[in-house]
Image 1: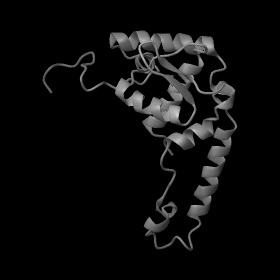
Image 2: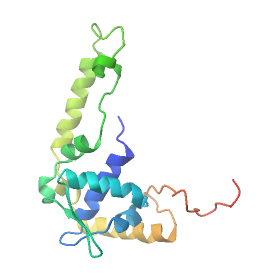
Image 3: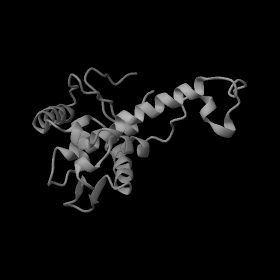
Image 4: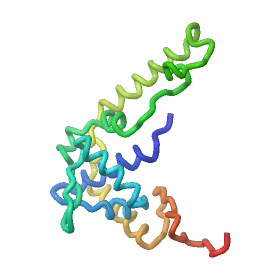
Length: 174
C-alpha cells in the first residue's frame, strides 16, 4: 500500500510546523524546505485547516500553526482525513465490485484485517511522537531549505522539479 503525495506532504507540513512551536510558519517556508510546489501546499494547508490540524492566519504577517497540540494530532486520523481511498482491491468497491469470486474468496477478509492492523499501528502515534528530536529535524529542514532555494537536491530529500524551473544539468532543448 502506498500513500499519495498529498498525504505525504500533509504529514511533512505538520512535522515542519510542529518543530516551530509558537511561530507562524509560511507555506513558502514549508515548500522551500521540502522542494514542494507552493500551489500544491496551499490546497493541503486548506484541508488540514478545515480538519482542525492547522490554524491559518491570513494576511501579510500570516502563516500557519498547529490547530491543537502535537500530542493531540493522531497520525492515523491525519491519514484517514487526507487519503481518499483505502479500497485495496476490487472487492472493497461495493456496488462497483465485479469480481466473480468475491462471495467465496478469502482475500477480502485478509486484506481487511491487514488494513485494520495498519491503522492500529498508525493510531498508536501522534505528531508529538514524530518530532521527538526537534533540533535534529530543524537541522535537516534547514539543509533542505537552503538546498531548495539554491536548486540543489539534498541526499535523503526527494525534490520534484517544478515545471517552470530548470534543474541542474537541464538544457533548453528537450
